[in-house]
Image 1 (cartoon, rainbow, N blue to C red):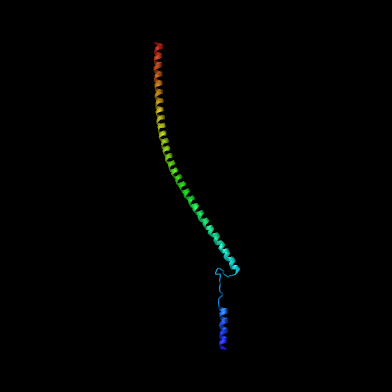
Image 2 (image 1 turned 135 degrees about the vertical axis):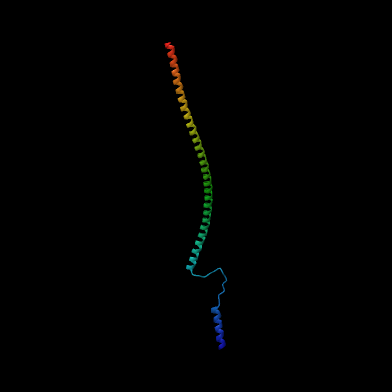
Length: 136
């Protein structure tokens, strides 16, 4: 009798505690709610990967754009420096021209004074000669 009970106990224990043989290992058993959540998470992961790629492309484009703008800014700064040099040289030219004009005005005043003196003297000489010619 002990053997019979032992035999029954061992038989049922192997049947109840033994694992079923799984032929397809790709099948996973879990509740459908969890499966939906997993699918949502996987979809979000795919979206985030695509967004990540787009963000990297956008960052690369922005880097290229900023590099172009930096070169444009450097060119404009160089033009600005050149313009400042031209402006300074032009200002120096105007200063020299103003100085020359001032000298010429002074010379013109001197020439006018000289001409006035010559006209006065020649008028006096002419008047004297005329007086002598008329009353002599």
